[in-house]
Image (cartoon, rainbow, N blue to C red; front, side, top):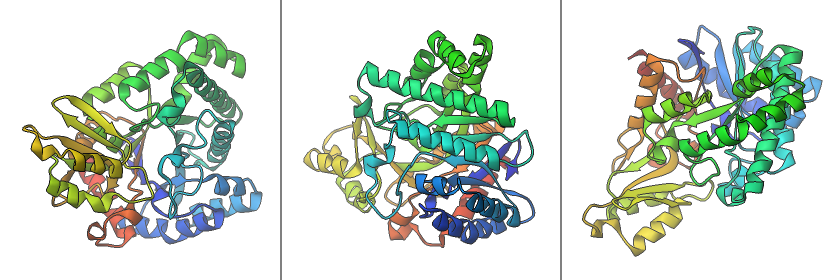
Length: 403
C-alpha cells in the first residue's frame, strides 16, 4: 500500500511455498486476510518471495495469467520480489545453503534475469511504479576470499545490469537489483558494501563494461548502473552489525548508492550476556536458519557464524565472569512490534531510528516487513495467528511513520 511516497508491504517468505500451486494458495489464503486488516479499502502491495521452481512455472502463459487474475481479483499489486532464497526455505535445514547458488554461479544470474522479466510484466500499469529484486550479498564470505572471485561476482552483476537496461528499453519499466548485506557474507558491513560498489560496480572499468554489454554511451552506462544496482538495507542485519543507523544511511547516500528496498526487521539484543541469558536463548538455537551472532566487548566485535556455536563458546568462557560483560546481537528476526522479550530485548530501537529518518526524508521507495522466522519462533512469542501478527507489524510501521 502507498504510504507517503513509498510502498509498504510484507514479504511472503514468512509462508511456506516453493512451487506455483503452493504460492498460489499463499496468495489466496493469506494476502486477502492481511489486506482486510491494514488496507481494506485500497490496493495492497505484494512483496513476493519467488523460489526458482515457482518462477519457472510462471513462464507458462496459463500460470502467469492465473497470477495476474489473482492479484486483480483481490486488489493486490506486485512491486518487489525477494530473490534471495533460490530453493526450499521452510521445514528443512537452510543455514548457509540459503546463499546458493551465489553470484559466482551462472545459475544465480539466470534465475535473477528471469525474476526481472516476470516482474517487469507484472508491475502495475502506473509507469511511475518501479520494481526491485533483493538478492544474496554476493556470496557466503569464505567463498569470496579471492580477488578473482570478487571479479567474477561483479561481472555477473554487470551482466544483470545490462539485462535490466535492455528490459527498460523494451518495456519502459525500471527494476533495481538490491544486494542485501548480511553478517558473515561477502557484503557484511556498510563500509564493505560501499567499497565494492565504488571499486567494482560504479568505477570506470564497470562503466566501460556496461557500455559494451548494453550498447550504451559512457554517460548512459553510468546512469544505468546507479539506477539498476543498489542495496536492500535490512534493519536487523545492520543492527546486528552494530552499525550506526543514521551514519550508515548517510554513507550509502554519500556514495550515490540507492537503497532500492528497506527491509523492516528486528533481531535479538542481549545487553549483557550472563549464564541466565544464555539459558533463555537456547530455544532460539533452532536447526533451520543461520542465526549469526555479533558480540561487542571492550576488545571490539567478535562474530560467531551461528547461535549454537556462540552459546557453546560462551559456555566455555561465560561473559558474567568478566567485569564489563558483553553485548550480543543475534540475527533472529522477531516480530517488530516486540521490544521487551522478557529476559532480553530486540533491536527495535534501531528500527525506530531508521523509520524516523524515513519519515523525515524518504530512505527508499520500497518498504518490506520481513519476519520470516514465525514457524521457528519459541511458542511463547507466537500468541496469535500469523495473519494477525503480520497485520500488527504493518500497523506498527504505519504508526511509526505517522508519529
